Image (cartoon, rainbow, N blue to C red; front, side):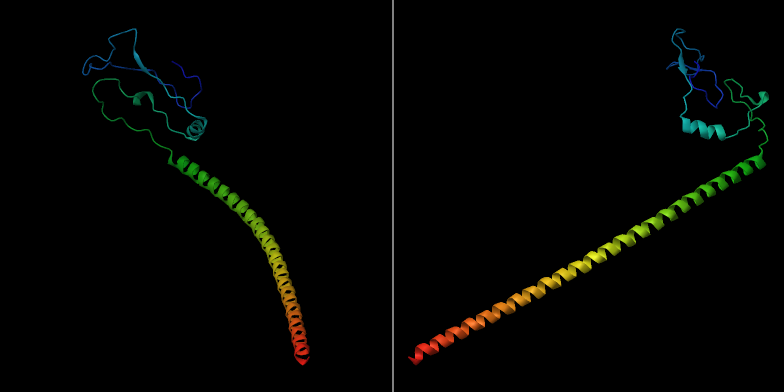
Length: 171
């Protein structure tokens, strides 16, 4: 069965598995009308991108695994282009460094904005605190003046009672 999406991994032929209870027997299913088939998994876009960028050497025809029941002897591995791998690795590191530098620049700019905002908020709060202090001081001063006036009034009332008592005693 062909996958509906193109995959960077070359398609492999479907693998037919033996039915349970057939260990050591022929690997053909007993019921020819219902073979068990393992299909390829469709990859997500992010996985496709990472697999698309990766370069892996393709095995040669003489390196294809033998399809026999006995294990084959190890095949010779193809030479790997380490210089290309190192160049791709260095390029990936440079790209990551550039991205990190850009992120740090953005973070620095945002930090400056935050400092300005925090300073403005602090200045505004300081102004409000100074106004609250002035209001409280004014309230206390007015309360003290009111208390002094009441004290003076009570002193006058007491003096008036004393003078009235003095007049009553003198008669």
